[in-house]
Length: 256
Image 1 (tube, rainbow, N blue to C red):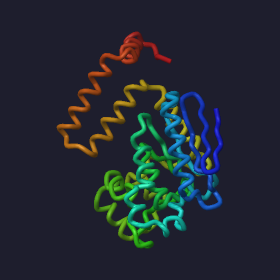
Image 2: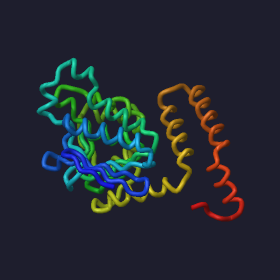
Image 3: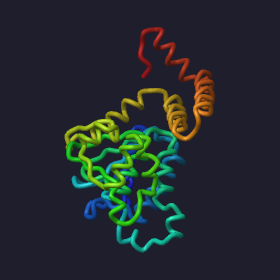
Image 4: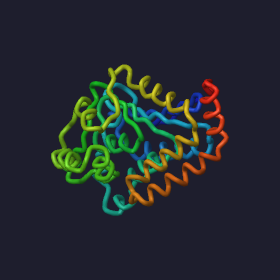
């Protein structure tokens, strides 16, 4: 199944959705139209219930997403900031019940970097560039950047990246844990899809609850996190999928 919109492209095949940011002429800058279309697309995937993994990428070779649309951003005031326009979208991406993978080629700056960090995993091309240069524009990375970046790379490193606004290459991003892997630029999307397919081989409910528990680990104390982990495991212990997969293991066969 495929669907085309002005600002994004959506393709679904065998439980895997690929969403492409489709404004290559402006480095896939995130404008209001793109935000609205992404909300609609994600809501549709949730309502449909077919998709169990998502790859998010950018059209063209120059950018995953070069950031928010600066022309629109310049005109926003305090009320707009409190509406959390981009942050609400990125929170929705992070909270999706299935794994999400950002396939990053070219620039992922500002809001583009924040969007990538909202995904569960990140695969980057060798020529990818990352950064949070908002302070150069008199603002901060306020669509989750000040929260997600420290969780990925550590507080001290995150402060240095945000305060200086400098650009990181793919090798450094891998070294500090901002991305999970680096591949040749031409192989980024295929590598992300392969990673998604590897995940799709496993129990959908187990992966879903694992994501829920792992996400909770960064927001709650250990006691609450351990409690959620125990409840998730209790649900899985009663699932048909768990029994079938363990039976297959014990019988030396692989469940398809």
